Length: 162
Image 1: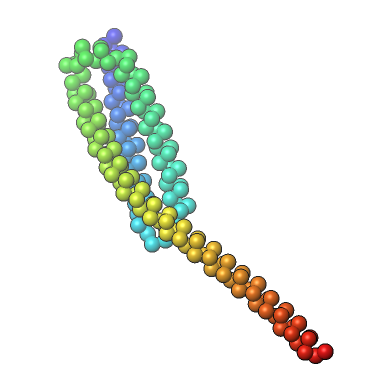
Image 2 (image 1 turned 45 degrees about the vertical axis):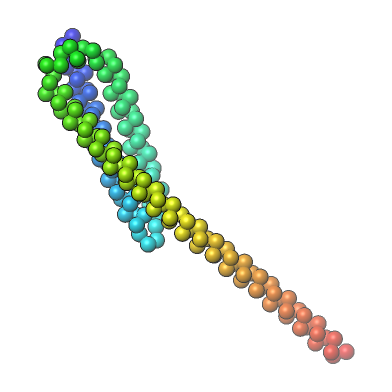
């Protein structure tokens, strides 16, 4: 049984290490998003690709969390009984948990900031679209008006000739 616990503890350890790696990737992409959002002309396609990448990383984190929970549910009580035997790995796992928590807090702070920047960029783009549509309507109206003016002058001259 102790050998089985050692394998499970190793799986828990690897799961936490992998989660920290994925969280670091997520943090890096979130920082890249911050850069994109800070540009004068935001590239919405690039931002969208980053969102897709983040979505896949979040899926990985959820899978890792679920796997960790399943394994821990199996051996949690046995691990507590043999805690002294696995003390080194438990200390490392606690360090990974702290690192994951710190990374999560940084991601949340950046996401909050990015959300505000994205809302500002979106509002700017909406204003640009509104102004474009307004200009377009004005140009079409002017064009129609000028076309109608030409017809009015033709009929005026026709009336004078008779």
